[in-house]
Every structure is written in C-alpha cells, then in structure tokens.
Length: 527
Image (cartoon, rainbow, N blue to C red; front, side):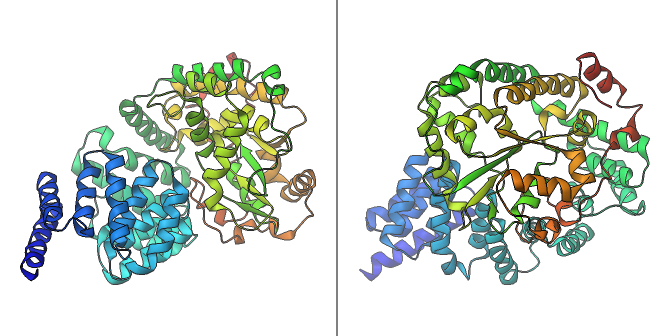
C-alpha cells in the first residue's frame, strides 16, 4: 500500500509540473494513472477536472471537481475551480456559496485566495474580495499581479489613496505598463503634465500599433482634459476611439435592429396581457430599477438612494438579460438579439421574474428595498414593468451632447468609439426613450441629471417622496457611503455632488460639431 501511495505522489508531482507547463495532455494522463491506482482519489479527480476545464468540457469538469470535494471536503482548490465553472454558467449564487464555505481554508494559498477574490469581484462582491486579496499579498508580497488586483479592488471599496500608491509603485518597476497608467489616471484630477509626459514618452519609445495603445490614449486624453488643454485632449480621445473601433467588431445597425424590435414587441397590448399580479417577489423585497444610458447619472442616483436606511443596492447585474435569454430558448452566442426579444415576449413573464430574483438573491441583505442599477436595463423596461408591476422604475436623462461625449471618452462602450456609430445609436436610443415615456406613463420616475446636480436636496426629497420614503440627511452625504462600487463612476462617487460636467461638451464645441449636427438633423434638441 505504501508503494502505491508513493507512486501516486510521484505522479501527482509530475502532474503539477505539467500544469505549470500547460501540458494538459500530460495532466490528463497523470490523472488517469492516479485514478487507475486509487479510484477514489480526490487528487486524481481534481487533476482530471483541470484537464476537462481547458478542453471546454464544462459538464465533465464540474463533475470531476464535485467528486473531488465529496472525497475530500478540505480541497479548497477544487472548490474554487468549481466556483469558477459556476461563474461561467451564470450560477453566481452557487459560486458565492462555495467561496463562503471554503475561504477560511485558503489561508496558506496566495494563488487560490487571489482566484477566489477575483470570482467575488466578477459577481459584484468586491467587499468580500478585498480581505482575500489582502491576505494573498501578505502571504506573498511583491508579486505584481497580486498587487495590481489589490489596487483595483481598493478602488471598488473606496480606498483610492492606497490604490494610487500601488499603481505608482508598479509603474516605477514597469514604466511601460499601459493599463496601470490608465488606472492611475482615473484616480484623481491631474494638476500638472508630469504623468502626461511619462505616458507620451512610452508612446514615442515603444512605437506600437495604435490598437496596442488604446489605454494610453484614453489616459493621456483624460489628464489633458483635467488640465483644460481641450484641443490636444480631444486628439487623444479620437486616437483612442479610432483604435478601439478598429478591433471592436461592432455593427451599429445590429443595435438599431434590436431597439426597433423592442419597440415593436413591447407595446401596449403586450404589456397589458399576462402581467404578474402583486408584483412583489419571491424574496420578500421590492426591487427599484435605475436605468438610462451610461454616464447619465445612474450611479449618482443609486448612491444617493442607497444611502437611505431602508434601501440597499446590488449594483449592476446582467441578470435580467440572462433571464430573458434563458427563457427565450433561443440558442445563440449573442448576449441579446431581436430573436431573443421576440421569443421572450411570448414566454411566461412569471418565469422571467422568478429567474431574475433567483439569480440576484445572493446579493440581498436585510433591507426592504433593493436597487438594480444596470444602465442598459433600459432596453428591457417593458419586461421589467410587466414582471414587477409594483417596482419603481427610475429613468435618467442627460443633455444629449454631454451624455454622448461622456461615453465617447470611455473605453467601455462599443457604440461610442466613433461619431459614425454614436450618432445613429443615440437617435435610435432616443426613439426607445420616447417609447418608454409614452408606454410607461405613470410608472416612470424621470430624473434629469442637470436638475439633480444643481438642486441635490430638492430632487432627492422629491425622489424619496415618490418612493414612499422619509427624508434622511445621509442621502445628501452619499460620498460618505462606504459600500463598494463596481461601476465606471467608482471614483467620482467618493466626492460630493458637483456640476463640473454640465455643458462640458462645449469645451470641445468645434470637434463635436459633426455629432451635434447629426443629432439636430434628427430632431434632437442638444442645447
């Protein structure tokens, strides 16, 4: 028996070396040899699971990792790998349950602490990720990847100064690291050209293709805008957008067709047919949906409202979109399509409602109202209104030019990389906005970003009254809200409300004239 155990240990060591070398054929061979010797070997099942994972045989990988855990309930490595598989299947609650169970066992593994923390971040729980990243860095200090993950999580949980310190230190070590330059640029307003010059020097020295400089272009543009060097800032924004568009594989006509299909399908007769009664839900809480285009003030509204003692936020989730796609039964690699919308509209809205609530249940605390703040849920407002008749829907609106330019300056939005796409997209979106305004009259709480930042208290009091909530001064001091944020505005929300971004587009009036003309010609008022 001892001889057999020694042999298994040798094969296991060989398998671990093969894992490091990414020789998955050898890993699979080692797993089979171990299992031939010991059919109930947790190590053999774990190694087999790794091999199945890289072969994209998800069902087999899950089975192998589950078996490993059942054979040895201390195998946190198998648990984290299993959680990762659940993540890819959108089974976020199952992933979180595993991590909560096994995180205490990972105290001596920087690798799996980091992996578990990354999964927590991906499911929108950076507050749970932070202590794991911290422990991983304590166990193995000085590892660049671990430190970068720690810095990113610091931003999510509001530890901005700590994040700045890490990024600055990483850049001393690796001055050409474009993503770290970009992340550092986001963490405060530039007051001099020192960092801009550093980034320009990287561009000049490396001489990379434009598509490899996207993050530097955005970062330089942002800091030049901070310094009010408007013309040069726009040059870099344009270089960033042009480079991003060249590799984005984006077709604005596909989004326009989607919007047109939503308007066609989600009409008055459809909305009135088969609405869920009662509207509350299977979790005993009331959802509050905050929607609008990105950069329209959705995060600001969320932070104000979630500072109330009776309201919590689950942040941004894709759970409504996922529920629609799953119930539609349409088999496609597209995350959303006209076919999905058309099919989902014929399904039982109760199943869509329940599917969404089941998916986000792992994020809920003990407060009676919870906010779902994914801006692009604006596309699914018909389904939301039908599934949750009692749920408040808050729709944000911002000056079209400010909104469009704010999206244009970011790396996140494929439809905003060029005016050739952004103009037609916004015109189509505006049709959708007007459709919801008419279809859901009486259901929508409409907020103008400019009114909110110019009269925060007045607009906040009005919003709370519409939601049946008493006024609380904490809502005016939202920057003191310590909860984490995974949004593109996770730095701005740490400061008091301001109006610096109102009519910001006018600083770039000359460069934005083509977009302005397009919108005005489409009948959209931009002043």
